[in-house]
Amino acid sequence: MLQAFDDSYFMKKALEEAQRAYERDEIPVGAVIVHQQNIIGRAHNLTELLNDVTAHAEMQAITAAANYLGGKYLRDCTMYVTLEPCQMCAGALYWSQLSKLVIAAPDKNRGFKAMGAKLHPKTKVIEGLMEEEAARLLKSFFIEKRNLN
Amino acid sequence: MLQAFDDSYFMKKALEEAQRAYERDEIPVGAVIVHQQNIIGRAHNLTELLNDVTAHAEMQAITAAANYLGGKYLRDCTMYVTLEPCQMCAGALYWSQLSKLVIAAPDKNRGFKAMGAKLHPKTKVIEGLMEEEAARLLKSFFIEKRNLN
Image 1 (cartoon, helix red, strand yellow):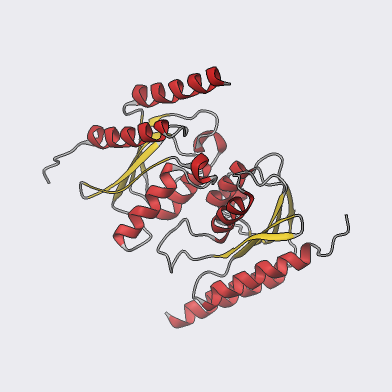
Image 2 (spheres, helix red, strand yellow):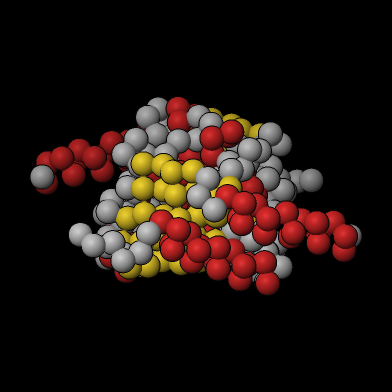
């Protein structure tokens, strides 16, 4: 199949979502879910605005994508996410049986790998795509926060 | 403080939620969240009905409780849940900094402990309260499912 869009194209879309989170004073993380070259879920972190620890970008994107597909499994889908998912999001991705996960920046403290959580064995993982852009946005956010306090 | 209701009282409420899931043909798991002797979140598993892997009882109860409290932390709250939380739900509870978690039945395969995920270090855990009742409901559900297929 001709691939009109590549991984970088979709990661840019996830970074646009992260930028939207930044502008709303949320930790800047964005995610998109792609099925047959179409974005079927897109979201950014909204934990502060919604006062809800479950409102991570990935969780909202999973719900949106499953709603679009009319089924709870994301077996032929790829998620592009700007920061390594936490245990909660990895756990949701585990249940969804996601095919492929593309991560920009690692989260060495609270990422699912450091915490010990697991993705589904069928999920293929690619790490470090546009890591610098994602990490730069996170760094700016935390520097700004520190300077305001 | 006089405790009008004890752990068993609230676990019974969680079991009532699990029974509601059973009646809707969902894997029977229920959860309630209690703050100062009041139930501020109650939910049952709705993954099939909503086609959404994130619709576990615990996740919905966390969102409801945070909404009630107007803040995302559940620091002075107890969750009563009829089955050991999975990685996703343990991950959400980690972020919420829940004070106390009371679990009825263990989940030896997909529970957060078997999968390697972690609760918040401040969360006190009590296991096995009304385990038989919770396990019996789950067993009935799966026997019924097997006989129908």
